Amino acid sequence: QVQLVESGGGSVQTGGSLRLSCAPSGDTDSSTCMGWFRQAAGKERERVANIFPGSGSAITSYADSVKGRFTISKDSAKNSLYLQMNSLNPEDTDMYYCAAAMLCSAAGPVGGWRYWGQGTQVTVSS
Image: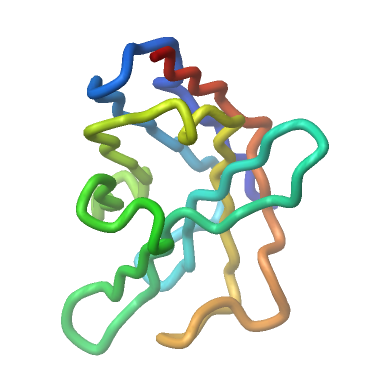
């Protein structure tokens, strides 16, 4: 069983930055797929950024809406996940969720994302 705890959300003004953290407990390692998603009330969940195991270095991918502004990273020692968010704008206002999948390939989770955190709120004001 894996539990994910997000932190780092908050309120910032347009152009500001935040760094989200996701601390996993349980059986996670460098082969675990991890990712960040976001969802506003009444809207579908959106993929923000993912990190998958690669043959050498990890493979990262981003939604077009955050490319060049957000950076996903993983602490190999703690298996903690981070999301550095820069140049935030009001469209980034959402609840942000951390997700993990134990069955993972370079192409992504096998069978879907199994574990989810409770979320951390990000609010960007204009």
